[in-house]
Amino acid sequence: MQSMLLCCKLYISESRNREALEPIERAAKLDPETVIINKFQDRDYNRVNYTLVSYVIHDSTGCPIYSPLHQTVVAMVAAAYDAINLEQHSGAHPRLGVVDDILIHPLARASLDEAAWLAKKVAADIGNRFQALDTIRRELGYYRPNFRGIQWAGWAQPEQVPVKPDEGPDVVSRARGVVMIGAHQWVAMYNIPIMSTDLSAARRIAQKVSARGGGLPTVQTLGLFHGEDSTEIACILLEPNQIGADRVQNHVETLASREGMDVEKGYFTDLSPEMIIERYRKLISNSD
Image 1 (tube, rainbow, N blue to C red):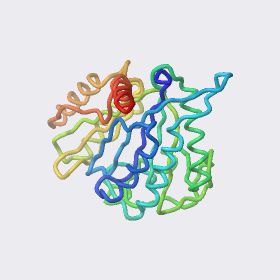
Image 2 (cartoon, rainbow, N blue to C red; image 1 turned 135 degrees about the vertical axis):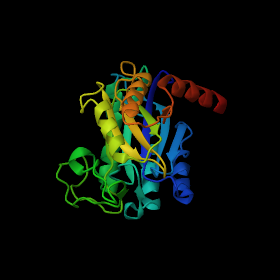
Image 3 (spheres, rainbow, N blue to C red; image 1 turned 120 degrees about the horizontal axis):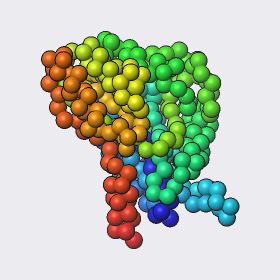
Image 4 (cartoon, rainbow, N blue to C red; image 1 turned 45 degrees about the vertical axis):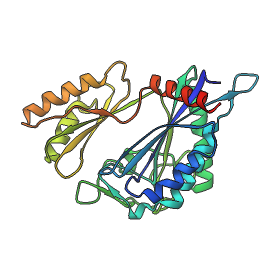
């Protein structure tokens, strides 16, 4: 079973309230066959990312039929909805819901089809049980801050969403918001701090780095405030083996120098697939 692994990255809109995170983390540990590999939280963004790994089982025809990740993720979502109210949340990172993103990756010998199977199972359960949504960021205003032009606070969009969800209703709970669920080959999250509070300059740099702005292929970026005295270029590397962090870092440094701004070394918000598999296997062997 250790050769057919699925990884779930679960992003939740909270990092400052420890009492809210405790029941979510308890839910993550209910099934010992799901392993929490990594936790990355950022106070300024008010956002936490849990990386979980477990196996997938197939029937005699080779179709996936079970993964411990399924019920673990649903349990964590239930705990998050009980503990967090989106209307009382604000942070410097975009978000649409209490549980903002659930992204499933194949690891080891697992395939994208198996990751997609799990994503659909989780989406169906969440959509039916909690009346949340699986939909598209840009059409829902994900990139439009609604508080002082730099932060996201509460649910700022109409309750009737403009996109028909695959699962769940088309009316949004203002306390829970929207959850987006999907499967994708491995992507890397890489953030680059800029020692300036000039958000307009950071956004210009982000646009020039991104594929949408004519920059690096397969790279998505955001220019965000991060703390009181810095901004940050938050990057999604859709194909990190082709366009990696070093290339993105160099490009940002070149553009920032033209703006007269200093740049610090960037950082990944999660482990590599190889490190996740290695840590999973060590944790599993130690629990036997």
